Length: 172
Ligand SMILES: [Zn+2]
Image (cartoon, rainbow, N blue to C red; front, side, top):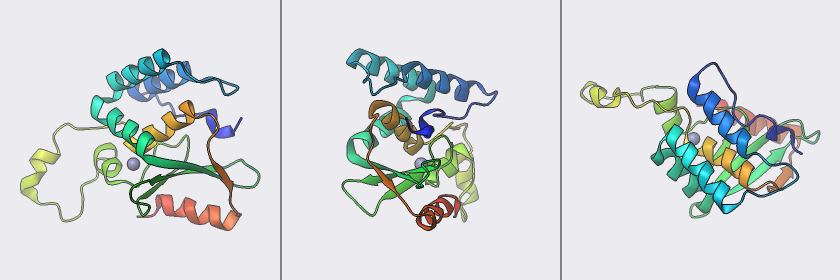
């Protein structure tokens, strides 16, 4: 079993992360056992109740429309998951399993609550409305993919390649 299956989402003392973590744990199966259709829809409705319909739907869309590959270091201790849109191969997002961080605009804006440079004052009111999200569709899709497809496509990278991707994830 790959190490990154152990922690799907880091848990804090906050309610939402703890509850999301519980939901994923509840549906985690070992030895490649797949969830039944009933379990799947139960999982989706529990996540939707916690994270909202919109976020879950965007994550499910990614599961349908994007390819996933897991890159490992040769010792398999570290991994990065790369998500690539099947329609636009230039659209690539990389995330670290178990780490709730993504470079995407949605994450920066609604999870980290960062304002974009050059954002006009008159738009502030609308944007600072209480839309706060726990995570983005890429992270959620990655967690779901890990849960629903226990044998992902994998590739071993050299340490240099791996470092390059890793730095890129956190670089603006
Ligand atoms: Zn994202």
